Amino acid sequence: MLKSANTVSKSKFWFLAGFVIFVHLVLAYRFFQLQVLDHNEYSRRAENNRIRATSIPAPRGLILDRHGEIIVDNYPTYIVSAIGAEIVEKEKNYKVISAATGIDTAILKQNYKNYYRNRFLPTRLAKDLTIGQLSRLEEAKDELTGIVYSQFPERIFNSKIRASHVLGYLKEIDQGMMVDMDEQSDYQYGDLVGWSGLERQYESQLRGEKGVAYYQVDAFGREAGPVEGHDNILPNPGNDIHTTLDVSIQALLENEFNDKKGTAIVSNPRTGGILAYVSAPDYKPDLFTGMISSKDWKTVIADSNRPLLNRVTNGTYPPGSIYKMVVGVELLEKQLVTTDWSVFCTGEYEFYDRTFRCWNENGHGKINLEQAIVQSCDVYFYQAIQNVDINDLAIRSKQFLHGLITAIDLPTEMKGRVPDRQFMNKLHGRYGWSKGAMLNLSIGQGEILVTPLQMVAYTNLLATRGKTYPLHLVQSQNEMIDAPAIRSRTWNRIQDYMELTITQSNGTGRWSNPKIPGLRIGGKTGTAENPHGEPHAWFIAYGEKDDEMITITILIENGGSGGEVAAPIAKRMFQHYYGPKTTKLVSK
Image (cartoon, rainbow, N blue to C red):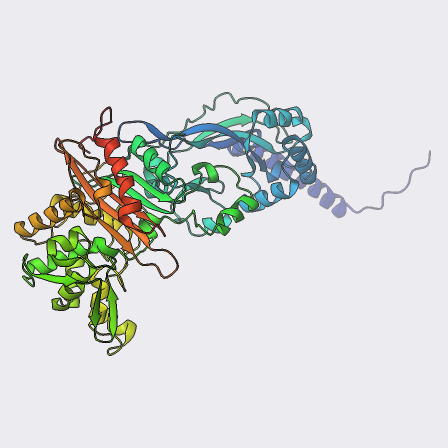
């Protein structure tokens, strides 16, 4: 038998043998490292591939009224999310989900783009799934990869009221919002965050702590049952907040403003608590709980009535004649007029080359400060204001919180505007305005602007002779507001004038008098000129019976006369509160 000669040298043979042995030794060491030395690390990684950990949203705290009635609650809804790293065919997933839920694939793709964080974390695709949609998805589960379902606590609202501007709404965090979030926060894409109203103001209290759920998954990311040895971490619900609102009073005022634009606020002047808070028109409180369509959003934005505007805190208006008590206090405190000093109102007043008119074209005749407030005579204030310095009036006005924020527990609030000499010089130039500007200010017109919320604080100060607390919506005890330095005699007179405005037959606020035995009531009407249309109707009032006191502040945009339009609403409010079978105020 022939054999070929071995031509490999011994050196080459030993080199090749050594190389083979070396490779085997390296492989043996690597196997030893993976299976023995680093066993725990790679076992943990394999376990993580087998186990999916998903966060469980925490139910937000409830929002309740002063009597414990639930205003905002939670109810379970379902969402579907996708984990990018586990998806095999993304387009197929979209088609299957769209067929099962009826949601357009374009919306699913846009949601994936908006809420995407990374390929290993769930990205929300759809929200508010019904049981029927979820059942159809479950039937198609074998065709889906990397798809997970979860239950989500959605907001649900009391059917008796809307209160949308005070309660606020939640918003889903997307990529754009995440940029502005605090780096230390644990918010994630798709989480809900309070975006306005009490939901935003008390976000840290209402928001709970998320939990964690563990699931076993197969190689395609499909759930394959629970995981032994990994107990789910239950979420901790947020804390409830008890507001000062009263559902029955809120419902009454919302019904009154069903077809009106404006505001209505009822408060307890002895505590500063808000019992009812209406900004009309408003929006359905559940508008933002689900996936609002572009059509619905455009409809809300395009509405000329501006339903998203919170008129109570962010609407600014001239106060009209309800400002006359500020002027009256300044006149009495500086002793610029006496209670007997009077003018003769003919219905108009000549000031140099201008004619300033009273609302009563026929005039009021001879009239003093008392009747000037009771009958709301403009001519009296045209003459009296000429003795007042504009800076002194601005200081007095700010004592009643005009031009200042009230610091109510809501996210935003306008300051309004109280003009002084510096402001007028800046606006009109040093010689661009004259004493004639004071005539407009004397009746709450001209450059002065207030918010309805400031008028609530103003009314509370008048009702309590300055002994009131800051306005608030969540029950709390704060330090009393610094009372204006006003003599007791002046307080007495101003309150007497306000009460005569209601009780006298010629008082402009007589239409607000419910004539309930034992009810002491005072108020003031206002008709604020509006360059964009009909005048705004104002009415402020306080009522006290059996040591219980409330104040009412009403503004009706383009409503006309405050006495004829706004005052009757206050009457029905007093009848509701002080009449028989009514829920009484508690000391909160």
